[in-house]
Image (cartoon, rainbow, N blue to C red; front, top):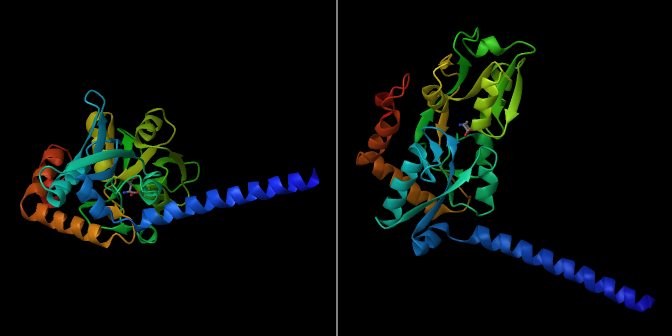
Amino acid sequence: MKKLSHFLSVILVLGIIAVELSACGSQKILSRQNVLANDRASRTIVWGVKADTKLFGLMDVKNNTIEGFDTDIATAITKKILGKGGKAKFIQVTSQTRIPLLKNGNIDAIIATMTITPERKKQVDFSNSYFDAGQSLLVKKGSSIKSVNDLNKPNTKVIGVTGSNSVANINKYASKARVLELSDYAQALTGLKSGQGVALTTDNGILYGMASKNSDYKVVGGTFTKEPYGIAINKGQVSFKKAVNQALKEIEDDGTYNCILKKWFRNVAGFNYKEASR
Ligand code: GLU
C-alpha cells in the first residue's frame, strides 16, 4: 500500500513538471515568433488601443467600433505595411493592462496614448514618437486650482489612472498631494465629477477630449511634463519595429498623418493642431 502511494505521488510530481515545462516552452516560442511574418501571413495587425479615451480611442457603442486618432494612425500604418487589403484588428487595453497584454502575445503592438519613458524601455521597444503631449490638469470651472503648484498641499486629492506615468509625475511635481488611482479614464472622470478629487491629471490631449464633452470642466496650468507617444513593440521584433517606423515616416511624408490630426484635433479648443502637424 505504502509503495503504491509513493508510486502515485512520483507520477503526480512528474506530471506537474511536464505541465510546467510545456508552459515555459510555449512562452519561449511566443517571444521567438516573427510578428511581421505572422502578420503578413494573416494580413492582419493586432493593435492594443484605448477604448475609454475620447479623441484617441473611444468605444462607439452604437457601432461597436473603437474610434480616435490612435486607431486611425494604426489603420494607416497597417495599410502601409500590409497593403490596401490589410486589416487592423483592435483589442481594448487600459493604461495598466497594455504592457502585460503585449508581453503575453495577445497583441502585436500598443498604440494607446503611451509615453516613451526610460522605465518602459526596459520592458518593451518603442517606435519613433508619433505625437507630442504633455501632462496637465482638468478641474471644475471656478476651481481655485490653477496649476500643479496649487496641488502641492497636504490633504489635496488628485485623481489619476493606474498604470499611467501621470501618477508618478504628480508624486514628483506636487509631492504633498495624495493621488487617488482609478482603473480607467471613464472612472477617473466620474470620480472628478463626484468630488473624489480636486483635479484629474493626465495628458493635455486626453483632458481636452473630456472638456469638449463636459462644459463645466476646463484644462488648466499648461503642461508641466513632456509626453512623447510611441508605439510599443515586443523586444526582439526588429523587422516589425523597422516596418512600423518606415510606415510612420511614409504617412507623415504623404500627408496622411496631418489629415488624421486635422480630423480629430481641428475643433479642439486650446489645442494647436497646426503646431502639431508634421
Ligand atoms: N501618456 C501617459 C502614459 O503613458 C498618460 C496617458 C495614459 O494613461 O495612457 O502613461
